[in-house]
Amino acid sequence: MGFWKSLFSTSDRLSAPVKIQQEGRGAIAAEPRIVFSVDRELDLYELEELCDAVGWSRRPLRKVRKALQHSFLVVSMWEERPARRRLIGFARATSDHAFNATIWDVVVHPQFQNKGLGKALMKYTIKKLKSEDISNITLFADPQVVEFYRRLGFLLDPEGIKGMFWYPD
Ligand SMILES: CC(C)(COP(=O)(O)OP(=O)(O)OC[C@H]1O[C@@H](n2cnc3c(N)ncnc32)[C@H](O)[C@@H]1OP(=O)(O)O)[C@@H](O)C(=O)NCCC(=O)NCCS
Image 1 (cartoon, rainbow, N blue to C red):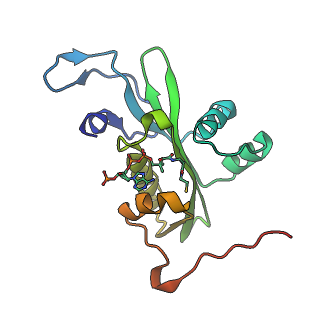
Image 2: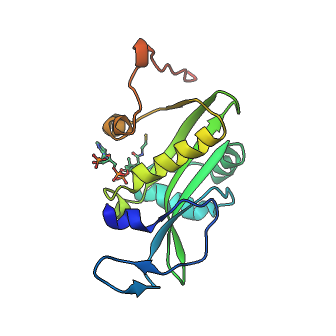
């Protein structure tokens, strides 16, 4: 966790590679680092690969493109090396642009899970929403990740409020 933390860059745009000083070692230029972006022009095939990696069912790319275009915020997380960068995390939010936002499609590539990166991705997403003066952030948690969101401060059924769903027959 400490290692990854030292590599986080929370700039909106991918910044130029910098030398990274690691404990007990000299400055290393070629070490990978983790960066965030809010650029919504993503390679949809790369995003699909990421979603495939966690076993999500495929969605029509034209609908994914539309969803990204119409999202309020699109956050991607990258492992950046001098020669290439790789999409390793993603989240997006829809919003009324005033009071409410709902976070969707939170994912970290399995090779990068359990290192604090999901938490960093969520914190970055929340920070961005707060900077837009959004005060009410909601999400729908799969049962196996309720605890992940709870640790980030999300409440389950606050004051008894229940999420309700309508599906076509
Ligand atoms: C859920 C997910 C985004 C978490 O990402 P991650 O990088 O593994 O999470 P982190 O390492 O940042 O974990 C942060 C904290 O949450 C805990 N945590 C992570 N996943 C958890 C889980 N499934 N259940 C309970 N706790 C969990 C960690 O132990 C850690 O606790 P700590 O702060 O006390 O150390 C990732 O597992 C994932 O992409 N899963 C598949 C897709 C998915 O289910 N998305 C959510 C859809 S609602």
